[in-house]
Amino acid sequence: MNEIYDTIIIGGGPAGLAAGIYTSRGKLKTLILNQGTVGGQLVLTHEIANYPGIETTSGYKLANTMKKQAKTFGCTIKSNLQITKYNLGGAIKTIEVNGKDIYWGKSIILTPGGTPRTLNIPGENGFKGRGISYCATCDGDFFTDKKIIVVGGGNSALEEAVSLTKYASDVTIVHQFDHFQAFEHAIKEAKDNPKISFIMESELREFSGDEKLRKVKIEHLPTGEVSEKDIEGVFIFVGYKPNTEQLNNHIELNKWGEIIVDPQMKTNLDGVYAAGDCIVKKYRQVTTAVADGTIAALSTIEHIHNIKDRLQAETS
Image (tube, rainbow, N blue to C red; front, side):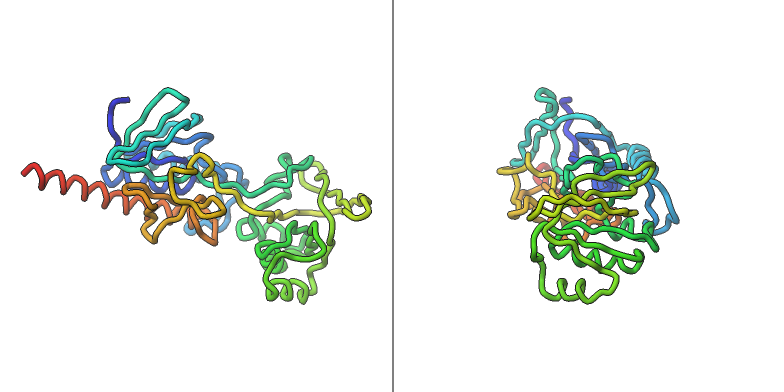
């Protein structure tokens, strides 16, 4: 492990894989270090129907294709490991893995991704992708003419509920408080939509069904009364958590833990870039992650070439 990579990419989701394709094709010695299964959240998506140029595919298949592309161009990928220490300062950065192995890189692209916050109630894990979704843009079309629930009371929940009325026959918003934490225009738009109804001061307690989601249990918080509702889909919008806990005190983050980048995906540290769901951004889609990864890769290629040009000038 004494070799020095031109760039080390942290994370093997769509942003990291896209970055790996571009940097390795750009002749940079590239290493991807991934803490879980290559593909990230992409592999949990049963069907993708809005990726340009591909009519329909599974998340697993798309991730596997991207992985093969990166490896074909010479990218090294190591997965199912634990990153235990970062050193992102200086000309050569180091990443410690599994508490013992050290990797050196002239640049770093951070793509650790993020995860939607879950309700953490019985049945949620089992029905993910089989009736439970965290992305209206990704999955709304699969719920055409169906009755669904939207969980949440912020801007995202209300805006996505309105968006889902383009597909669903009936949308019920379930929120734990008696008021919404959203802008007035978002609240008004939701209340004015004839397809949307509301169950306030309530929380979901359980998901159930067979091969697909069929029912939910809902508790009315002031009374403790639990009712059961037949339903064909649930969209959960209770926040988003970037996977950046390990990067505290290493890189500049905003108050939500998102990495702050400029339009070139550069962070506050020289030679360190970030892309995908971990950065400050509004929209989180496979296509936007791939675009971020592409920009970060092209910026990294330019950074490495500048280093080589400086070294050549100093030694000539």
